[in-house]
Length: 358
Image (tube, rainbow, N blue to C red; front, side, top):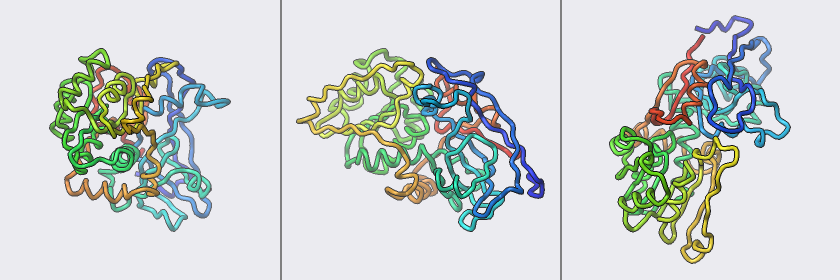
C-alpha cells in the first residue's frame, strides 16, 4: 500500500559496481542503492510511476564494457525496459491508473518530468493489460514482442510455404517469432535451443515443427546437417539471436533469395574480443540474399506497423501463447540477469523481475 500523502517514497535502484570486460557477470558486480523521491516536487506535466515489472535482457551486457562507455562512469545505475502504473499525475495525457512501458533506470519508482518524457521511450498499455498481466509490457507487448514482430513481418517478409530457422527459439523473442511465423504462413519452422526440455516445449507451445538441441553439437557443420534434416532444401529465412556457429550454419543453408534478420548475438556478449563470422559476400550477388540488422524501436513506437494493436489482439484470440518465468523483488535482479548467460539455465520465454509495492 502506498500513502500518496507522504512527502516522500523510498526508491531502490540497481547499480553496476564497475565494468566487467570479459566473462560472465556475477551478482556481486551489482548493488541495490536506496534513495528518496519527494512527491511534493512534482512540476506540471509530471507523473509518478510505480514499477511493477523489470526486464533482464542479454543486450545489457554491452553496457558493462568500457569500450561502449567512452568517458563514462564505471559505477552507474543500470537502465532498461520497465512496465508499471501511474500512481500520481499532473499530466492530462498520462492519468492516474494508466499502465505503461518505458526504458529508464531499474528503479522501483520514477518521477517522470516533461523533459524525461520527451527524451525517453514510453508506450501506453492501458486497456491491454492489468496488474496481473503488466509483465507483458516488457515481453510480448514490449521490446521482445516488437523485435519478433518487426523482424519477422518487415525484415524477413515471409511468403506462404517458406522455411524459417530461429536461434534461441525458447527465449523471449524466439518463442514469439515461431508463433508469428505460423500466423504468416511459414510452412517449416525450425528452432534451436538448449536441452531436451526446451526442445519439447518449442514444439508443444511455440508451434515449431523441428527442434535442434545445440548443446549436443560442437560445430557449424553439425548444426548445418541438423537444419538439412529438418528441410533438405535449406532455409528461406533465418532469425538471428545467437551468432557464432548458428550464423555460419544458417548462412550455409540459405537458399537463393534468402533473408537473415539480425537482432542479437548472445554467444559473443561475454567475450572481450568476440570472434567474427566469415561471410562469402561474392556468393550473395547472384543468389540475391540479404542480411539486415535492426532494433525494435520503429515498431514499439508505432512508426512502423501496428504492433501493440496486432499483438494484443492475437494474444486475446489465443493465437499467441505468452510464456514467462518470474523472479520476485528488485534484489533478485542481479542474479536473474546473470542467469541469462549461465549454462544449464532453465527459464523459458520472458524472464521477468516482478516488483511488488513496498
